[in-house]
Amino acid sequence: MINMYSIQVQSDHASPIKEGTTIPSVTFKTRTRIESDDENPFDWKDVTSEDLFKGKRTVIFALPGAFTPTCSSTHVPGYAQAYDEIKSLGIDEVYCISVNDAFVMRAWGLKQGLPEDRTPGSNGFQTVKMIPDGAAMFTRGMGMSTMWDSERGFGERSWRYSAVINADMKVEKLFIEGGGITQNSGPDPFEISDSNTMVEYLKSKKD
Image 1: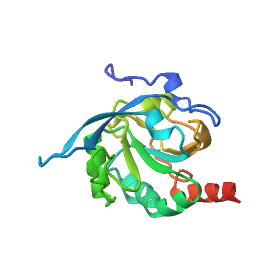
Image 2: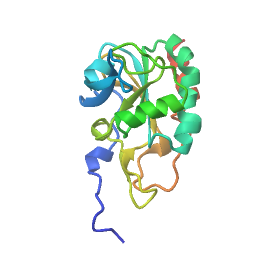
Image 3: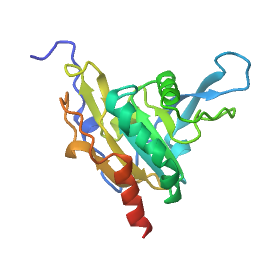
């Protein structure tokens, strides 16, 4: 039975981007550190896809939600532990993307033990950078939107995946869990978007 208040994800928002395709150009609403003695020394800062990706070779990994079990116990810790090795394999930045707001992503990063960057103007973390896609604009543009309303009560979130984005903002390599997106999925597959798979891929391109 479909609830009258349920929202269906548009088909193009759930049709994954292809390798070789340019990633979406969106604006992320972030919080950046400022010079202040206030107990909350942050202000809003608009950061674009171009700011994050253009001219860099980056790794992104996206997941259903901050503070959720697999994301917190394995996905983020794996990339945090592999950060130095990933950087040594020709990667400029590692980004964690979730459909959560900037406040939640910062709190989660601190809870995960990511080293803080207290430099004014910084994203907030020294290693893995936490990118808030609160309105799901990037997620929709990547074709990775999934609705978990009757299942888990999450609402719209990102399907779990990882990718390498080249300096021209094109998808070099894409690892999508489960082979594709399932709306209101019972299982939350986690087999190929992990840090080990990413490191092995990067090593293969280095050889």
